Amino acid sequence: METIRQKVFTGWYFMRWLRLGFGVFFMIQAIQMHNTSIGLIAGFFLMTAILNTGCCGAGSCPAPMKKNSKDESNDINFEEITN
Image (tube, rainbow, N blue to C red; front, side, top):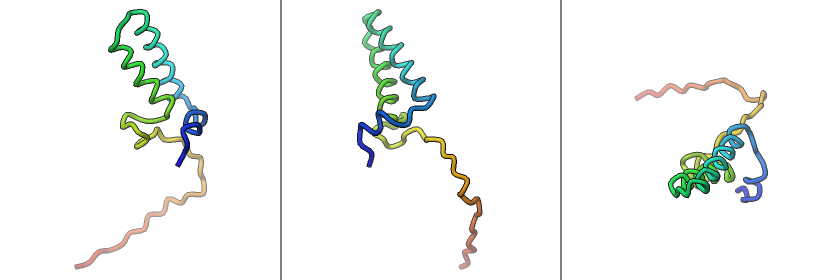
């Protein structure tokens, strides 16, 4: 299991930076406009970016990392089922 520190400081890719940017933008807007609902949206974007989670939350479906594995085989094994 990953620690919180590993989740926060590793695996930064474009979509994670984009969510962080949206979160910061919405947070600035919420402070300037004194709007709590925009602040909640900002909090959502910031938390998904910082903790690298998807919309499901609690680490149940983190955004997938791109894997460059050429060793994997694409062979499909079929098994015939008879009654």
